[in-house]
Length: 318
Image (cartoon, rainbow, N blue to C red):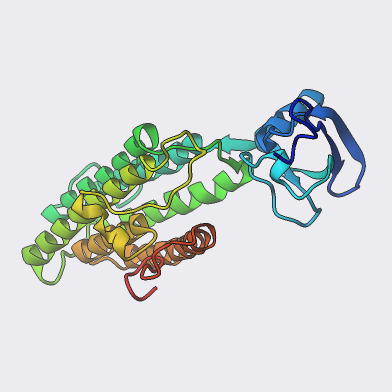
């Protein structure tokens, strides 16, 4: 007999008490809540009482210092009685991930182009609106532009967001990171005194080939992840390789999209032989390694049959 029934025809009705996580003051008491309601449903009910706190701003927990409950968790499956007490925390103004990514990527894209076209007052007025005589500078601009245009197209057509948001205050930091680094590396690559790579055309061609392969690989992984969830966001499976050879990296790592991303920036570093690009690549690698390890541990906890040979981001090493 299902736990939510007292007989074949009578369901247990839940009550949900929502308290302020800081003051412990009762904010809302929801009566006659269906046991199959999700946390997302409860947030919507709470929103009717407090319109200033739309669902994306809400964090509901079973303990004041506990982990925030996911929107897809079902009330009757939680470790609570028929009267559930939840603690509310205001996450502050939120932005959707599509808006966040557009702000980050468009800014980085346009910032680089400002330096490439040598807009007046960036370099000496002698070089205003001139172009570099080195082909690698133009090629670097093409690669950088392609990278961020690809990201924008993925945001529109590939990525799926399960109602995820980012705090408004965080977008300032993220945009400063993307726009700032884009300006820094663009300043040196497009500088009138820039010198081409030591090994000339051969170095540039090999780096360009590797860059292209990594970009295709990154796109392939993103498309594979997008197709992973078949039943909305309810069915959860871990990613596996497909017939696309670029997805075979799933045999060895949990987050090959980060592996390809790092590979693309390493290639861009070799192509331009520019120190700021190398530093940006290092910082990106550190951050993506942190994200990959979190995702890797989550897969291991959630799926008992998760392949033990996989590492987080670098095959057999890390």
